[in-house]
Amino acid sequence: MLAQSKLPVPASALVIGADGVIGRALAAQLASYGCSVTKTSRRPNIGFDPNVVFLDLRSPDTGALPDVEVAYICGGLTKLSDCRENQELAEAVNFYGPVSVARQLTERGTTVVYLSTAAVLDCLSPCMMSIRPRGGQSIYGKTKGLGEIGILNLGDLTSVIRLTKVITPEWPLLKQWQVLLRSGQPIQAFDDHRIAPISLSHALEGILAAAAEPGIWQVSGARDVSYVDLARIIAAEGSYLNSRINGISASSSGIPPEETFSFTSLDCRRLQESIAFIPPHPENLLHSFDLFADNKRAVNEIVKQ
Image (cartoon, rainbow, N blue to C red; front, side):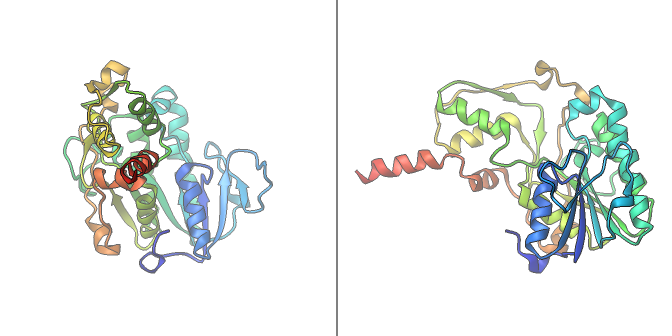
């Protein structure tokens, strides 16, 4: 659980896109602090949760939304290939819809935090500053960049929080690599495609902090790491020292150049100065997941015998 004392927590909040991984975690975190949380979803309210309101960013109508202190726009289309294959939908839910919602909410006096991505930048060098001109090449990066511009142009009740890759112990790629390592099979991973991973908790720290002041905030891992190096860190974490991990190009898996990132790490000094945020190193982040707890317990049992 995040330490509430260093984070601004509103009395009431709206989480738009609360059925996604980040939105769901954010809503739960806010509620744990005693915040009155309203959640939105474009899916049917199967559980008839009274705190869930229907909202579709493709044609947003905020009439049913309550007045709140802060609204967090977590919804959108985030998978790079989905944005590439359906640009019209990406523009609707990453740009037009969020800007429309933000305009309606700020007119009521609500502070709006828009979740964005390092992909709005050119990703050609590490530790990219927030003042760097936008230069995203992917459809995802372009539509999120337009969303940033449209929302920040609404005035001082708006802020943007850019996130690098958020990973959890349940990330399907981690699960896949664990299976391959345990079965002694080789792993193939990209050696030319990099991320600066953060955990869900790190993302929530940045999102909550961004409500304090307008403008652009950034949260990032300490450094960029290729997927093949990430796999090697995981293998070392599980003591699979003889594992076969081979680097391949992203293009060999059909990923176009505009979706292959040389760097994604962001300058986090604003967040560091505000809440003493510490960018995580990939080794420490993966160690915190304790992915091979079963292996370690088995080794300990053998040592005891």
